[in-house]
Image (cartoon, rainbow, N blue to C red; front, side, top):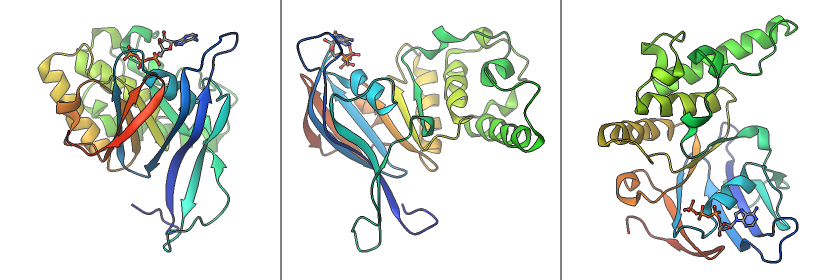
Length: 238
Ligand SMILES: Nc1ncnc2c1ncn2[C@@H]1O[C@H](COP(=O)(O)OP(=O)(O)OP(=O)(O)O)[C@@H](O)[C@H]1O
């Protein structure tokens, strides 16, 4: 899907290698992938194959040892329309596995506005933050409950909605999800899949998951990882 300016933005991982500081071996080897704007990508593979490590690099939590992670715009002719830009970490949201374990606040509102400026923000910024909050709440369907509720008292599915909303407040262009269905009962899993289907209309989403069947109706492109490398781009459903 093309943006308002008619260009197509593609997030690209180009020949990325990653070796954590002080270690001898690469955790990622020559990893490359491309994800089109407003598409849904899935990364799967055995435990320890490097999936989470790759998400962390995409989120800017660690830096590639070599290679690049960029956003490239393409024109109607399929040619790059300008120089690639680095993928800005502030435009990337990441929801870790079991995000509810990291909830800190006593209310949903506090959880969603953690770290926001309390006094000194000027009117325009406060207006923008209020709009972002409304957007996030509506996008995940938290508008049916009071934002004064304790996040810890929510059902499993609603906790995941809140975890997504916390990221959406930052209006990310790319949303990274690590095992979004893990630990949920069947009803909450179906709920989260439905929500992701809705979010996919507005956002580029990249998911790491073992739950291939349940996510298959959403997936536009997928990659199998093995021993720190992308084994190959897979047709989906498998
Ligand atoms: N900072 C680090 N230093 C050394 N090894 C690490 C570091 N971080 C991760 N590893 C190792 O790198 C490998 C890849 O880990 P990663 O968490 O990316 O795998 P994964 O595919 O996400 O696995 P899972 O499906 O179990 O979550 C694992 O063997 C892990 O123990």
